[in-house]
Length: 465
Ligand SMILES: [Zn+2]
Image (cartoon, rainbow, N blue to C red):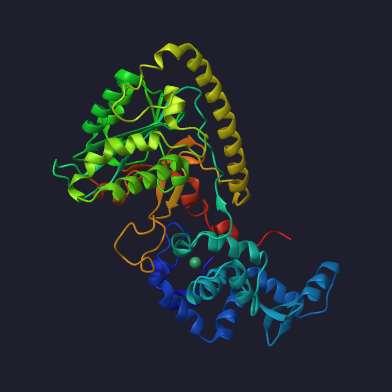
């Protein structure tokens, strides 16, 4: 439904009641919004009221004696003053906003006034105006407001519960891998350290490397595999050496499941995070010559593997090897070999005890963690979402950039509140990227794009009374 006065004051291209998906950002429309509101308020509302068929009918009922109960009810709810229709409210009479003008009213009280949340926007509108289902309309409007979706920082409880990684019952079922560094370039040209930790025993392997190339990672894994066997699962972050095709191929060929931890959820990779800190500490204290830090790596590995782990109450060496390695010039295994059988029994028992303790610790951690969280919103493949950017991911001040990204599409549901997210097909961004963009994102970093349909024509019409 269109109004004559709108034709006068709005450019033709803006005439349609566009939905939120195709609506221009408010920066382009704010002038238009102001122009309308800065007209004599009385006149534009009056013009709207006089041209709206429903309000014409109200006007007729209000200007004569009620003929029946329905008309009496109308007269108890509305009043006519100087030819204008008002709704009677507890706070006083409020302008009745005609259907086609509601968007401008909400725009002026929301977009023009700093994009405040529902309650504040609603209070502002209700100070002057009334229309049926106003709260629902404003709620839908704000849920479709693109600046709000992209700009507003999430508040309240964070989404997503803690999903502990199930504890393996044997060593080398689950291996956490990561890169440490970069460190100062060593005399041998090393910059990084590949780090692998066995989830069951917490046994740690460290290897200095010149770069984070995938090939260096797979060589390192080959070395481990010939002694300890292939892991069933490798858990990594999303560093490029682990997201590469070469690494995927390696895992496939060796029947290893590769579990990538979602970006910016360090809690899922907490084991390795805590490790990073302790290794850095060991490396840095013992090294006087900074270009020889890589010569300390083996010592660091030994020291850590022989320090009691707070989660298991044992040293990783005890857990994996079943004995306490001796350090020095002695041959460590000589005395131990005779007691192998007994040690294996001890080892199994130790592992079981440890698993119980870790499981209990995880249950407690989960309870504490979940109390501060709410269930994550469920998305499905094909849903359009925006992704919260990681802090400090660009050099720009965070105040200058909106914290949420452009809309993206969910390609696959990964479980545990994680999703594979990619560019929308045919999006301009997809056209700009050289390679396809795909990321595993946790639900707490997402929020849905606008409500499907948005403030559609259906919402613009009054419900039948
Ligand atoms: Zn907004």
